[in-house]
Length: 145
Image 1 (cartoon, rainbow, N blue to C red):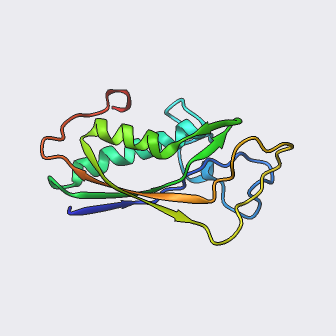
Image 2 (cartoon, rainbow, N blue to C red):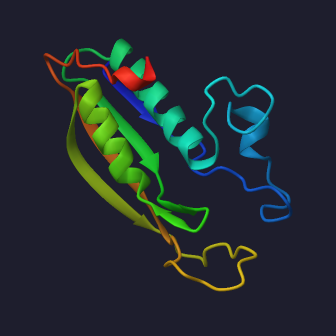
């Protein structure tokens, strides 16, 4: 393949009525549900999904093929998680070279959670990360084989 575009759900759903009216991440992806085989949950399960998808993209892309990934940073358990950095590091280990990064800013207001006190900045943007498969990109991230 010449190009793969990856746009998975980029946040876990914390449950409750936080995302009322939306289908929970866990119902469709191995995360916190009964189908979870990875042993990781929440944000780590989201990153694991990206890494597994990146490994599959690496398998099917031709040398110098392009991978475009949409993601968003998040706060999980009151901890800032820079998802775009985690993905870039993991994909480098898979044999991808980061080529570009686009920041897409929302035109509407971000969703408001049930937090009592805001500690971190709201995430009002997402990223499109652009990678290409390195000619000698046979490095596989050992932790996710």
